[in-house]
Length: 165
Image (tube, rainbow, N blue to C red; front, top):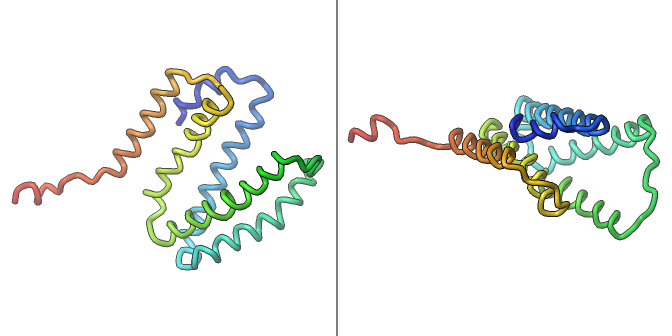
């Protein structure tokens, strides 16, 4: 991951560090959420209940955080803004979190978390495809390294005793 984003950190302008820091904080908080779910009784709770708790806490704390940093709120309800809110609400906050919390009740967090490394890579790929950002050879090598790491972690080799039979 460091290789994938190293170019951006080296060439970053002063105004991009805030976004980079927010990305790092988001990753730490996502990891903390996963650990909290797996380490408490929430690991046995239905996924819908875990999702409800997650969204309830967010609904209570995020408006306060928004006021604390001085965000102006919704400035204009354009079709793009409404579509973005619907996508974030239905796809991101509902469907994907519900699936993630269900997976956490069925599987260990470590193998699932390996796939979380794909999220920032998909972000870069969609930046290239949708925003016409540059695709560098270094990022291509880094993406292949992440995919190789995922394959290595999830590869189930033949048991030595089974190979002798």
